[in-house]
Image 1 (cartoon, rainbow over the protein chains, first blue to last red):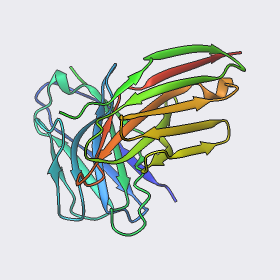
Image 2: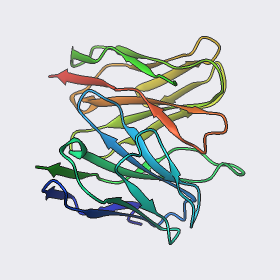
Image 3: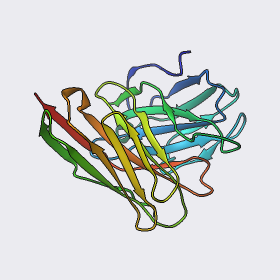
Image 4: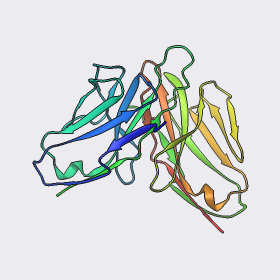
Length: 116
Length: 113
């Protein structure tokens, strides 16, 4: 059981370049989330998904897009990277709310992105 | 705007000391309160999920209490050990929020031998 995995672990982009971060989970979780973590701040939610084919905006969605074409994968895209998007990105997953969910989120190892 | 505050921001203690941190959260639309432990270079791991006012949870030397009416939770560590050094995050889950969490900025604990 790999849990939640993220690809890549590190990336350096130039301003204006695009990239996609991949998150995969093997726990059959319904809900998946993308966060960013910046110094002195808590984890902030970018986008989330409550099931295959669904996505919704979180607290800081601007400049990012997401897709959930398969239940186990959640992709985060940056169409035109900006230095303000330099951050550590974490993916997480959790069971849905229906019947006996423990609600806790399981986190991936993070992707450190630098935009120059 | 939902806001979660944690204090202190950082804490240095000696091995064997007991310590506690505070998490303040909105007292309305409460669904659950999470505590996560986040070691450097690793990903956050859940310690406790508490849902009921008056809940107390314990895992080894770490315990947590919850007061939903006044909007606070305490995390206690008894007899701190160097391996307890980590950032402790609390997160508020609100009703109707699809398990979304609002995180505090964390308390960074350093336990010195």
